[in-house]
Length: 226
Image (tube, rainbow, N blue to C red; front, top):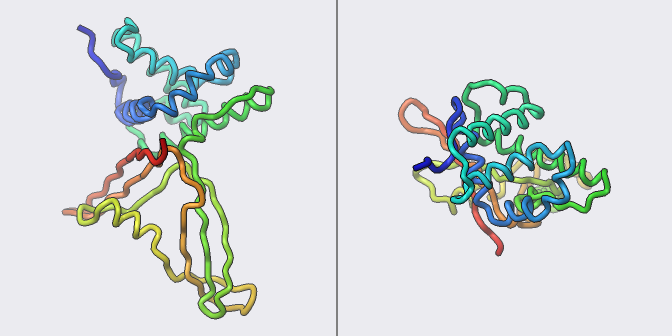
């Protein structure tokens, strides 16, 4: 009986983990598979093609064995090396950094398709959202705001905190240095809020503490909308 899952072709657990997380997101996968006729003819859709092939190799009736799956993993690594050459090596890499690079590469492939006149919707859009940062002058109350685009949210996390309390801490107001354009005051309170929500929110949990000052990172995918 063939083994399920993806083979480790040499310190690739970071890659296997991210692939398995992305390819079980129904909305993300649907955007790739349902638009295959749009991107399949483009020579620049390397990562899209790899993700589609890896997904199909995991299906029960695919007939793929561990050798063919290993070949697919090498193709994924080769595709990623076009974005960052370190992925050609056999050293362990950071899973969170890989996810960010992978999403950036998918965005770039989508932008190329659009320049070719293809009506294509990038799957990364399922993970994207906007935060608005509001600064209120502590002297005169004047407000100013900016918006930024994100595809994940980083949280400080520890065993003493729940996920909810970590989120609350992230969006808690803080006092910052800020030169007011109105009264020339030098301080303001800064508050960040969601302006738009993603379909799936990716949380990057940064864990610090413990004996010896251990630290670790975790990724969590949360469905926010149906």
